[in-house]
Amino acid sequence: CWTMMTSARSRGKSKVSSDVVHHIPDVTVRYDLLVPHPSRPYVAVCQETAGYSLPWLEPVEHHTAVVAHIASLARQKYGLEAVAVRILSYQHEREQAAQFRLYQLDNWTGQVELPAGLVWLAEADLAELALAHVAYWPALEAWFAERQGRVPIPDERVPWARPGWYQRLRYWLEKTLAANHWGHANKIELYRAWSISAGLWVATDQGRFYVKASPPQFRRETGVTRFLAEQLPTLYPEVVATDEAEGWLLMRASAAEPLLAQTDISRWQEALARYAGRQQASRVRRDEFADLGCPVRGLAELATEAERLVTEPKWLRPEPGVAFTDEELAQFKALLPELQRICKHYAVAGLAPTLVHGDFHPGNILYGRDGPIFIDWSDACWSHPFMDLAIFLLEDFGNPAAINEQMALVVEAYLASWSAEKPLAELRAEFDALGPVAILFHALSFVRIVANLEPSARWEMHNVVPWLVRQLLTT
Image 1 (cartoon, one colour):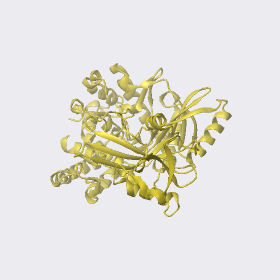
Image 2 (image 1 turned 90 degrees about the vertical axis):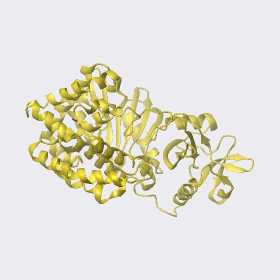
Image 3 (image 1 turned 120 degrees about the vertical axis):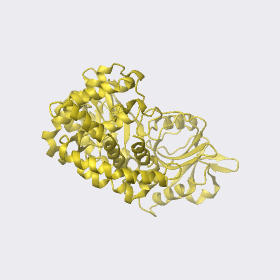
């Protein structure tokens, strides 16, 4: 029973999304830093007795997306003023219980004079450089080839790791702040940077703001968030300005707390009930959401798209250690026709489609003075409304124990909000039947996401597809 499976949810670290850095026990993690010269094809290196090495760190807390601590540690250890914009190489040596990450840092301050102990190294002198991991060499050589114009930058490269991006953002911020009499951007801190988004905190004379930047595959988020906030401001982030061409969303920092910090079950019930109401209200705006770029991902389309997981086995077998076994693949192939049958049935007999958030987990809900606030609309699309509850129920994002024990009441509050459209018993049956389909929906979301990432960055989340499909085999 999907409604009642919440007590069996994973209690481990989030595999889908989390903003909290975490410790990796019993594993040594080393970050090596590629810090480029602001205008020449040089990198900063440490002078050693026998040659040179890249600057490096050994943080004790980690996160694939959060990078603010890297800039802070690089400043403390080396006096560098640079920010981490992407991971060039990631190696996990399981036998050694070690991870090696090569980060590209960008010099947003234009720092040319290096602190003591660091010098600039040209490509011609790479033979004198000692690297912590042999896999860094191709990444380093590829970086020099791009920097010197011998090869083009891949089309999938995220904007914030491209030359000139920060300068454009800073100009836009200053112009926007000045136009609204909010003073200057006294400090801009890159907090998050990975292949699906970047986030920056902006301190001004009039308070703090947050900029979310999206790559092309998620550009709809800027327009969708603004459109939603215009309809009912208390339920969505306070949008100050957007640049849809650049994928920039400027929001005022909220005093609201994460829903995950709430132990009062009524607040969780309120959040889902109000969310159901917004889903229902979205139907009269379908054309506007389509114009904003929200794709149609209905149950009929899902039944067809699911074939990709069989015809393109790379999605279930991305690398050793997480790849599907032959037995698991056979299990999924046997299950797929039933999932497709359910899709086709409820495409006709189910609730009418609505706006779907696409990544609706408790970490994407805040709770403030006026109630819930729904954030992070990068995956917004049009589908069956119950597709949104898969991630919410499938995984524990650090939910309070008291909430987990009463999650069935939260689900009931959500279903009760649909009782004007169907009897509650029918809604429960539909919800249970579509639970596994909703997991499939999210697995295919990640197929789309990973397919649009730069190939060298697909490791960041290519394990999510097999992880999600495995949940189908155990549900």
